[in-house]
Length: 153
Image (cartoon, rainbow, N blue to C red; front, side, top):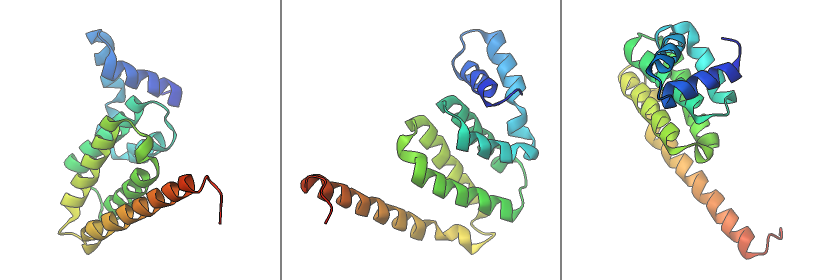
C-alpha cells in the first residue's frame, strides 16, 4: 500500500467498479484489513484521515468483521467502543448516511459482545443520553444565536 490516496482509489474501485476483475483485485488487496488484527490501528488511521466515504466504509466494515470474528482483548474492545463514541459525536453529522449506519452497527456489535465482560459496556444508555443532551444544548445555542442576529451577550 503506497499511502492513503492509493487506498482510497482501491476502496472506490471495490465499492463502485463495474469491472469484476478490477473489483476482485481491490478486494484481495484490501482483505488484510478484515482478517489481520495488526491492521486495527490502520483502520483507525483511515477513519481519522481518509477523505472518501468508501475508505471510511472499508475501515468500518473491516473493524466490524474483526470484532465479530476475532477474539479481541477486553481493553482493545473498550478502546474501539470509546473511539467510536467520540468519532460519531464529532464527525458523525458530516458523514454519508451509509458510513454512519456502518459505524453504528460496529458500535452496537462491540457493545453486544462486551456486555457481559465489563460493566463499562453497559454505560451506553447514559452516554447516549449525555450525547443527545449535548446535541440538544448545541441546537438551542444555534437557535438563540440566530434569533439574536449572531450577537454575543
